[in-house]
Length: 298
Ligand code: GUN
Image 1 (tube, rainbow, N blue to C red):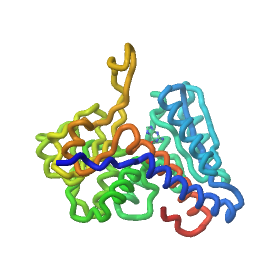
Image 2 (image 1 turned 30 degrees about the vertical axis):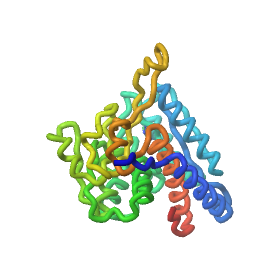
Image 3 (image 1 turned 120 degrees about the vertical axis):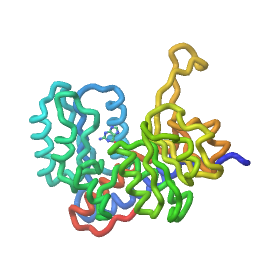
């Protein structure tokens, strides 16, 4: 069997961002200003700092406005909720993103559900989760939407295919399963308590791995020719690169899976770049909806 097609999420996301930037420019002309995203970071988590900086840079590069709010690690829930209230009522803000995780004194669900659903560009609000689950117009979480765009691009119609989503988080696993169901896949959600995961995966035409366990899904799990989407981004020691060095790896053992799969996303360069592209897409969609500027299908 020949090696799998490598699904190039970096190239796909760059083309997508180019289209989003064109639409953002047309929308700016219509509404008199660029679409605007407010990004809220609480505390000093280094990884969150890197993600937020990336999101801000990419938003600006796509011709949209980024409004940054950095709050101290000891910020109270009430002050954060007061900021969300201001942003909800600010006409110059189209999208609101609160970077997770939040410090322990703050209830994440309370904060997420305080964001006006129509500005909830992460798609985490319970109203957006409900809209997605019932087939209504929703802002959809960015990472699963990015996975769906890659799957559609590679496979065309997904109708009737067996899909296994490994992971049941609110951010990836559950919305991914809803999106695949909407595409008429037969969907199984597997997780840490699933028995015989290997047998479950062996029947899958599509495997989406979002477990957060480095290289857990090996080639033995993959049906020959299946499409494998690796959502994991794990930092693991790489002594072969020198003392104290690390490398990034997915939830899929790439070397063994690439020999079995029909197509596979690499890490890095697969799903990762799609997440920010879909955040920009959601910001554009939110702005267009707020100003009744017509559908923004991308
Ligand atoms: N932390 C890790 N992933 C995400 C994400 O997609 N959105 C937000 N807001 N925080 C995150």
